[in-house]
Image (cartoon, rainbow, N blue to C red; front, side, top):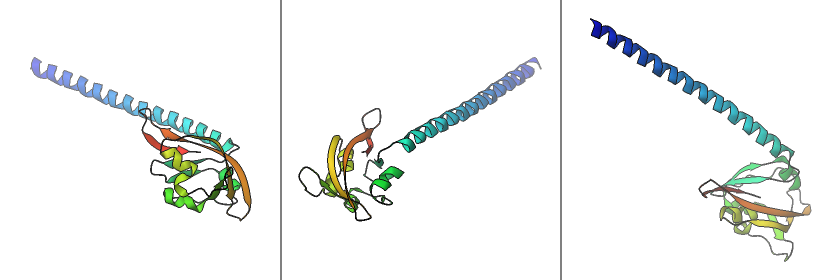
Length: 153
């Protein structure tokens, strides 16, 4: 009988231990989610306050984010290109040479090829038909191991 009671007590203690551990893990998950949300809100506030246009793309070149300033710069709602080929929707020329920028040579295309452009002058035609000039830069977005996961100008 003693052995049965000892097994029951040990089982009860182990069950309590694992349930407590599960609770702490759930509590830790909730805390991490809250911290992630705070960091996301902080980053969004920074992005929203930028006085420059910002686009981000995934590793395949699909546009995943365009801020409001970028749309204003381009004279309306800037379209989300699904791939590099659709960058041709954006009409732009290298200011230095007057040469039309091909879709595969747009700054975002450079970024996903692991190339960085710094302060290149670009003439462009806005979606409302007016023209402008801007200085653009672009860089790849990489994971800590160097894998390119996207790009941003």
